[in-house]
Length: 505
Image 1: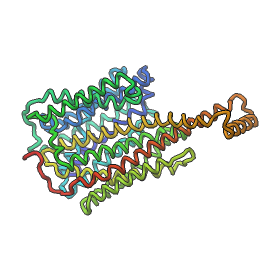
Image 2 (image 1 turned 60 degrees about the vertical axis):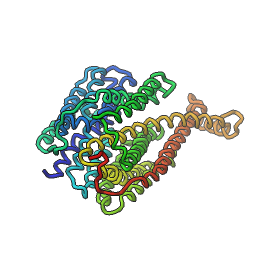
Image 3 (image 1 turned 180 degrees about the vertical axis):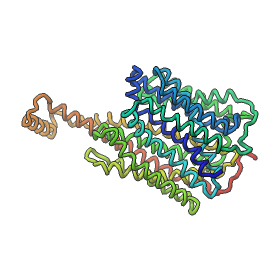
Image 4 (image 1 turned 45 degrees about the horizontal axis):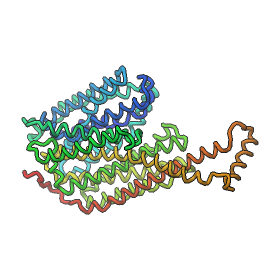
């Protein structure tokens, strides 16, 4: 079968699944109003999807062996498509949350399955190009999702962000039936089900994703709810590791992590998406809250970065087999660090294009980071373990993004309070500059005929803007520093391209 047809077949449902991870965010207010729910209640439509998605991703390899990979892929697309229709037809918030859980279960396996099938369809000499195709979907989804969701919601209805998945899902099902074939080692096999491992993994990852999604809103560990779920996550995941190491038929074979290149690659991918998601969450918040940009204009700032990534990915895909991939990876990491350092220089006078260019630089960096990192990380994994390996790789990528979002929103909140506290020290009757500015503002307001706004109110508003701007700078600095600090990890990775079995086969 033509490998490009295979690529289109597996990437089509994967792309809409990735888009659906972020598409709901911009429609929350419309969903809340339509279903008569509060904004905090409406966020469960996002949390429910993320939790169920996170639980399924790492067990994709196990489910592929249990049902057969092609059968499981078809079942996943069917579940995702049907639940998308039901989400669009939801009659209450509770029904929407239930259908989003099912949608997350259906969508969870699509990313690792498509990645492992692409690596099989393309010969080793073209793995860089295969990962470029996969990377375009991974990088493009989080950018096009909010733009597409906003446009559909404004022009049609929030329900159509789900209905639009149905025809694409039907086409994907038909293509999968006729195009995808299972190799002998991915056929369905009879196996004992590790119920203890499954239960511990579901509870542990579900609780972790809940904590990351709700932590900042609940003020982290000052909330008994967050403390409870954090405890459940730590205990269950620790027990899961112990159970799996001694299980004869583990849900996830943790022995994959014996390979130092695979382990290091997962750590690097965690922090790469920590940086990516942290920065693309901060930028729209900065633009809309401090600079007065509309959602559409904020999307235009992010858009060119996505285009830069799509240009960089194929270039990196061609280079990765012509030169040392570790050099390309180091270049990608440094460019990502540079981009967030550029973002840390933003101020309240920054113009549109000065916001766009650092995002473009980040897009280029992610393109040159993703291809060599994925190629190196999976280069030592035997084919029969590839689905399990890509499942873990995608899990660490997604959790890295969740940690990044939780980290930057927390830093933003805490540092804004700190800067406000420090700046307000100068706004006293004993500060001559403050008194001078206050008097000037009073004279200007009086001159233009405005008598109902006290100068102190305008000064306080500017104080809040400045303190938040400084907090954004701090968050971007930390992201940049983090990328520089992970650079030495590249030295641990092995370049060897030949597959070596780490599973005792």
